[in-house]
Image (tube, chains in turn orange, green):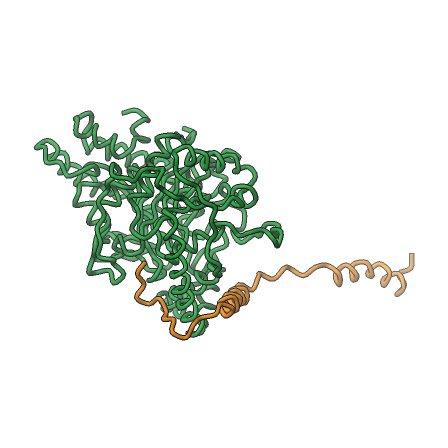
Length: 63
Length: 474
């Protein structure tokens, strides 16, 4: 069989297509962003609690 | 010595020692050999201290011979979470960056135990840095994932992992653990042992790793509520070396409890019908019925409405990040087994002061509401954890299906809430679910340990869950 440009292209196409669609390795989760988002979420939840101006922080914590 | 010895309570062991059935040296040797042989199976052992313990045991035997009795802990071997320092010995805090760390002083709680003749035979494994930064895998430890002796495919709970599994497997009669938010109650529940989180400030934290100055507590994991009382009596007390010390002592007096019928115990029915893992509901409901049969008045109640998770999340993260700032800035934080923790510490260094202060002010408000809640209650009863231990391969941050939006929260936040308020809690084994132990907790007012322990002792007189032993393959 004579190897024409068309035959070479046709045989290479499936491999090219697979290479383009195969998934890239999953990136590890961005734990820094996840943690920062969680702290922000915590702050948002605490911001919803009304705090009277005279309330002092529980620094000298005694149960 | 038969296997029964390894599952005997402190009171039983001490009686046998005093009766001369065996010596403290023989008892120490037996437990130390068992711990060394079986401890690695559960990733429970951090550092054996057998030689020092045997030296002390010889002295105890001398005292016993001369009838110099020093109390129920005399001659009893025990283990301690590897966050407590022993002078001259390695203290890893469960984390690779501290694998060679040594202190030249001993934690106050351990000194007190030593003074009554208790024998420290080993440091026990723990979750790295007691879980600071927020861990998401059971393997977040220099020693590998803690495994419950009931089924080593499942987690022991953390962060006092080795303390829970070593007591459950009969490797030590009791152990010390610590809790910032759940680290005694969780391994106690998942390993089927009795755990006591004391009131904040009752037990000195001098010589213990700090994760959160305003939340950390040291407490015992034992075979029974009574044993917890004996250990607490020894380790409690004021300590000028601990700025958080309440300056109070504790004398265990189980015989002077109030009449059961005069006690009001709060609970949330939704915990037992909806929140609890279906497999655990029969055990939790049976426990509720035991308390009802005692004659206490069970009162439906609910926690004051505060974002407890956000509160503990902010306070522990901010205080922990300050404590471990050198670890983060040096880059050694990346040696931790769980990358989520390293990231958690890094991100926590960016928490604004206003957020931490707001959390501490909201904590003040929550504390005021808890005082009101307890003006009408003596204790709160709830599942310690709402189901059995997860598989060691399960991520700990996996979320289950969303609950219906109208479901009441019940006591699902009792662990963070109780810790924020500095309240004592006692975890009592109450049965099994899928072959794994489950437990209920009693959470009381500050310094109400005697009441909780009396209730626990009575519960354990009426049940035998605390006497169950895991089947250990030879």
